[in-house]
Length: 484
Ligand code: HEC
Ligand code: HEC
Ligand code: HEC
Ligand code: HEC
Ligand code: HEC
Ligand code: HEC
Ligand code: HEC
Ligand code: HEC
Picture 1 (cartoon, rainbow, N blue to C red):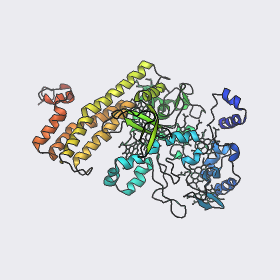
Picture 2 (cartoon, rainbow, N blue to C red):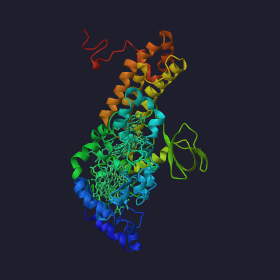
Picture 3 (tube, rainbow, N blue to C red):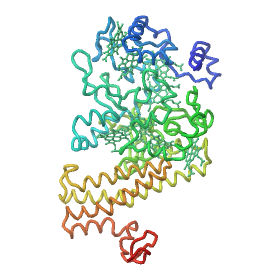
Picture 4 (cartoon, rainbow, N blue to C red):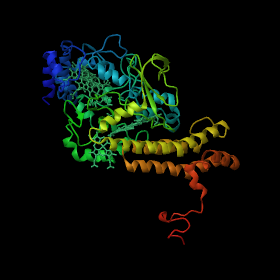
């Protein structure tokens, strides 16, 4: 806990010493210390110590309080801010957006703003509005989807926030000032501690359930097992937190997706080290395109590789000039760097190969044929374009989404139970329901033709051509010991 005082001390002494002291890494704060600790802010503390004692207590225990960053330094607003309001003689805003934090923490702000996390609202808007609309209603969006993905915060005339859109700390929340995300989605307020954000629970709050079953995945991996047993040795509140140096008992989500390892620095862009897109009907490897203004987008390897200087469309549809492109191989290289702090090269590469093999298997055996069959049915008008009105569409969605996502995430993060559970769900749905339901929307001959075209000639489904073959181990089929 003496840590932050010590850091502050270093901040004050000569910069030459700072350079020599590479191991003492203060959060690099962009604003000059003389510009915070606003005098007016002291009144907030006095009154709120009574008006909302718990909240004030949390702040008092924070690094911010220790370095003299007070309520107004964060809640400060300008009169022309959309959500500015007059409060006890000061102009404040309730929302402290990433841009507000970015006044002092520019690096984290910029990394976060360019990450997939910051795009979590547009991913809903552009890709699957029907899911919320047809299975639920707006209230499930407000209290479900938007709590993880983020709301578009609306401000009422008097500067107060529209109650259907706030409270909300979704990861891609669209703020009144136009910035996206919410730093308190991982850094719980009002302590804003980095130790707490390093815990797996900072992520599994959202990364659980059908969209992203990583809580189950992590807990049933050997990494989760070791974390649970050795939590006390994880050095969570260390200033630096470099894998293999400051801790070695187990990696957490942060270690692999954000954390420092060797010379590789920690980052607030969680997507940087991922080479696949594991949440599509068919997974493809992904380039990461970095634009000149710092914005980013992913592109599948099936698209042409953009060149430096070329203008291409960004996630939001506007055009951007390409500054750099990271290949899937480079992204994988960054991820593997973390493994090498605790494992051998062979071990890590082999684990990655086993993972890639599961993704390929899923793609070739189920993802691609199921997608091709659906496309054939749509183009023959045997399915309406409206999503989810036919049972087959629901089966298809559960197949690639619930089962397929679980299997692929399971294999990515070494959870055998989730890999198998997910793949067995995919297989059961495919053979037990999907193919039958194709027969319900198309006439028998048409169904047979489409199925034959897409699966009967594939080696993956060859086993279907041997109905006489028995498997005694399973306890059924001809020749089994249970036969009677
Ligand atoms: C004289 C007492 C007093 C002072 C001074 C004061 N507040 Fe408040 N503040 C309150 C009370 C009371 C509430 C309402 C609490 C409630 O609704 O439970 C409130 C509410 C708030 C809210 C929440 C508004 C919302 O939309 O939910 C914020 C944010 C806030 N104060 C910040 C500040 C800041 C920053 C300062 C200093 C510039 C400050 N307050 C000064 C008493 C005070
Ligand atoms: C480091 C920046 C920071 C500091 C310092 C800070 N806040 Fe906040 N505060 C936030 C953030 C972030 C939120 C969440 C609002 C949002 O973006 O949804 C928040 C929310 C609030 C809320 C409304 C949410 C709730 O749980 O009721 C109140 C009230 C509030 N702050 C009061 C205070 C007071 C009083 C102080 C000083 C004792 C203070 N804040 C200091 C960043 C800060
Ligand atoms: C518990 C938090 C949570 C809730 C609730 C949630 N999501 Fe997600 N969603 C996620 C996460 C995390 C991902 C990212 C998964 C990944 O990239 O691996 C995601 C991914 C997605 C994707 C991308 C592809 C896919 O389907 O996986 C879409 C579309 C989506 N969510 C829509 C929705 C909609 C619509 C709702 C509400 C009906 C919803 N989500 C509810 C956390 C959530
Ligand atoms: C996805 C979760 C997540 C979000 C969102 C997030 N952070 Fe962090 N933050 C972390 C983690 C984890 C750490 C600790 C990283 C480490 O030690 O490797 C951290 C560390 C920090 C640090 C300390 C850096 C240092 O070098 O000591 C600051 C400052 C910070 N975050 C600010 C922010 C700001 C500002 C935002 C919003 C723009 C934000 N964070 C959003 C997870 C998050
Ligand atoms: C007025 C400047 C200022 C603002 C605004 C500000 N911070 Fe900080 N923050 C600091 C300073 C100074 C430190 C201490 C740096 C150090 O000693 O490492 C700090 C430290 C942190 C840390 C590290 C805490 C730890 O456990 O070591 C986190 C995380 C953080 N801030 C997050 C945020 C978030 C999130 C916001 C917005 C809600 C925010 N800060 C707004 C100045 C600010
Ligand atoms: C408030 C909810 C929330 C929290 C907390 C959260 N995430 Fe996410 N995360 C999401 C959503 C939603 C997406 C999907 C966003 C998208 O694809 O645009 C996502 C996407 C991701 C991705 C996928 C990147 C890619 O390449 O597609 C990774 C990896 C990830 N998060 C890691 C983390 C880690 C690690 C933490 C904790 C330190 C964390 N997240 C905390 C909601 C959250
Ligand atoms: C041992 C390292 C490790 C740990 C620990 C870990 N992950 Fe992962 N994670 C990976 C790898 C490797 C991938 C696959 C990357 C790729 O696409 O090449 C992955 C993929 C993901 C994805 C899917 C991204 C995509 O491309 O669609 C999400 C989301 C995610 N992890 C979140 C989490 C969360 C949340 C936790 C903690 C509960 C966690 N991870 C723990 C290594 C890890
Ligand atoms: C901070 C240290 C640390 C990091 C980083 C780390 N691991 Fe591990 N890993 C462990 C420990 C400890 C175990 C459990 C060893 C044991 O007793 O079997 C383990 C076990 C495993 C296992 C289970 C092997 C088995 O017994 O079936 C796999 C697979 C694995 N790690 C892969 C990875 C990959 C891939 C990465 C990088 C994306 C990675 N690990 C990063 C510490 C780490």
